[in-house]
Image 1 (tube, rainbow, N blue to C red):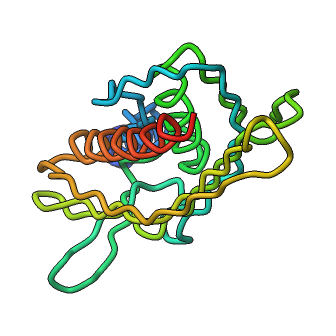
Image 2: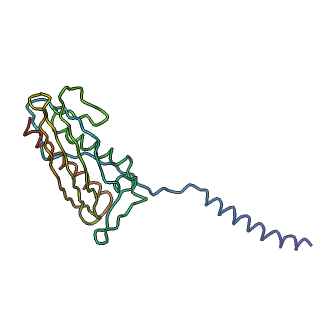
Image 3: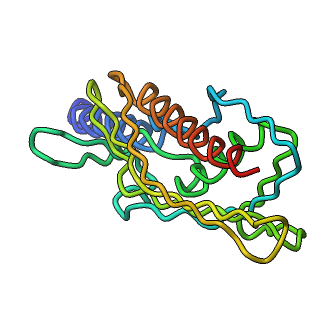
Length: 206
């Protein structure tokens, strides 16, 4: 009888140990592979030297719907398929990142320039205004980044209420590199080049 009890108990104990091991593994903490990125300002090639101070109201950037995601979006150029990475993500809304970095790049070029990114607004009576629409911001790992759009800069004439508006299309192409890190760097460089274009126009009119 004792032998029978032991033979019944052993499988039950083994099953209990196996289940507790599986359950323990199920609830044990696991490493999260997700990586979060932010856009960063980089030094541009244009160093503005304005003869007077300039204040710019920078209105909200328009971006394509496919970009406005938490996931970092890349492209398969051959098929046209868009890839949304669940591992590589933005640490802030990309619209905020684009606004922040473009603002920083313009500000750092010249101490005479102040940029007020919406909802901030210049206290000046006759500030400049900047509007940017990004039509494409996507590329292929191992390929090229397509960064295209249009910007409009309005500059008051002789500090008066009348303004001169300049609208220009931009097309900036950058090598993406083979990783998401280098992909982000290509976007940083593109924003820097866009800032240079805007600064050149501002310098001409100031």
